[in-house]
Each structure stands twice: as C-alpha cells, then as structure tokens.
Image (cartoon, rainbow, N blue to C red; front, side, top):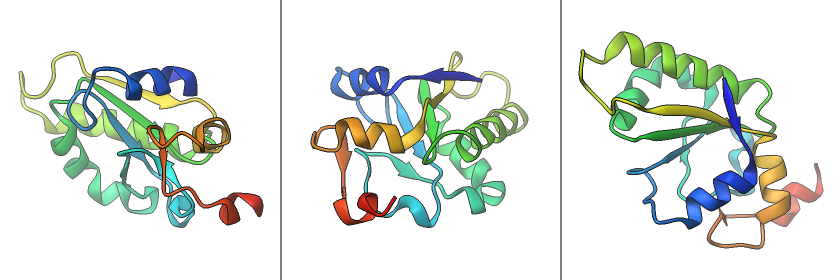
Length: 135
C-alpha cells in the first residue's frame, strides 16, 4: 500500500483539483470522527465498511485518486484501502471506472494532519479543541 504525507495531501487539496471529482478523501474513523475532519472528506466508518464498500466503490469509480485515513492510519485506514481495492477489482466491469485510479493512505492519519493544519480552514473543518486536548 502506498502512503502519502500530510504535506502532499495539503498540496492536492489546495491545488486546482476538485474534491470528490479529482480526488476523494475517505475518512474511516468511527465515533472518533467527532472533533474535526479533512475538508470535504467523506466519512465511511470502518465498522460498517464491509457492508458499504461496494457502494463506496461505485461512488468513487471515476475519481483518479482515493485517499484513505483514520486517526493514525496504522490499522483502519490501510485495511479499508485494501478492502476497497479488492472490492473494486471484483465489482467493476471491464473498462468501467477510472482506468488508472490510485488508492493511497494518509501517513500518520488525521492526528498528525490536524496537529499541523487545524488552523487552516482550507484543509480542516469542524475542528474542536476540546476533543483533541483530551487525546
């Protein structure tokens, strides 16, 4: 599985691309989604991903870059990315979807991303200091 850094993701978000068209950030945090998220990220909780992954594949099939993450991107993020890739291979017909879709994982997850970019409204939304002060 390929990882990208928070700085690389920040460049993508601030670039010319459009969220959910040119790239899709998939946040697989569950209850820990509260307290902030990457701007325009789609929350697909990991607890339900085994039953919703085909829907995600369909929603994201034409997006060239799909970025998965959880809080630390050590377990849930990489596992979700792997499930997604496996489901994509099984469910899309030959020639369907973006031909060169890249699936990556955000290195060090939202925890590091928010600590670096929480004050930038172009990158982080719904940030709540109380949630992160207790972590």
